[in-house]
Length: 202
Length: 245
Image (cartoon, rainbow over all chains, first blue to last red):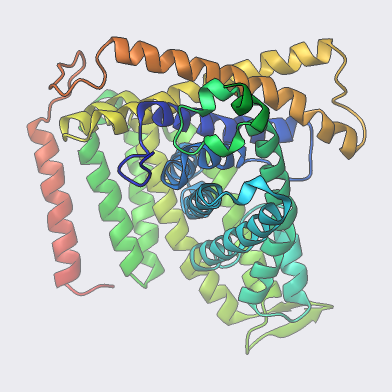
């Protein structure tokens, strides 16, 4: 099967983008309803990136933040974070990192560092180290302890980002595993998630 | 008057947004950005959306600006920091940085808020189609915006149904965490099923056919649109020729 920027945007993959974006929004709403202390707002990005590839994942992340940006423009620059998550998760899925435990751990580590790095860049350059959320308290604590701004923001993002990345990834992985094979086969990157049993009978 | 601004062509409004963003990115005097913020306020008064504008503004931007002031002035350590109490200190450099940063954020984000309040998605999509953007792109944009409220509704239905089956949504963090999967799973699977149907529907109606399609809804530029774009361009040129403030 041909893969790459030119071949990934089939109609089936294209229809997944709105689904992914709305999953991000719904995930965030569920978090607020259940009063969870974490932000599970990237499930859709992970899910789409895993089954439809890096470029579709990137588009999902970007569109999701633009939709949020219609109500809160602060979300638009953070599209960079979602885009990098989509891109990296897609490439990890392409090179079959998600088929074994070691690959998953490596992927989660890299994704945490990438998302913390991009989030830190956006936060420092656009907003002077502030996000307007509760995690600012952690940043302020690091600053009060005498650390530099860059250092504080990056450390905050690593701390809060690790748990977020793992949860987002774990939930979307569990959900991907439940997607029926007849749908997965139609997608360019869905094959690794079809269980061996099904293939044997086919 | 309100209707008049709503009927401006989307790219005209985008031109205003771009002009404001470019000028406020390049200018170093924060007075320029506050003038632009005033202009945006004036625009939203003219479009009759001032209450909604202020509501969104205070919910999102105001909080972040407040936090920036607190952290930059009182907590970040600068050369001229004078200790006040424990870890809190006052610094003039911090105050200047925060004014510079926040004025830019206020100017840029307020004009973006205004843009999305006076431009309907239908208009944006129609304008994109007219600009020969591929049908695939415009369809994804409009589908996304329509699907978000639908999925929100669906997730409410699902969580009600699961609650009726005895899923615990109150209690310790772990209990609430466990409630997440049974709420998310059916939502994803249902929506993926719908995707399949949607693809069939679109194909049956010739979505991928390599032909030029006719449209029901069309927008037209008026003379006023050209005048506004021209004013924006002249303003930009004057700003860069006259030397950035």
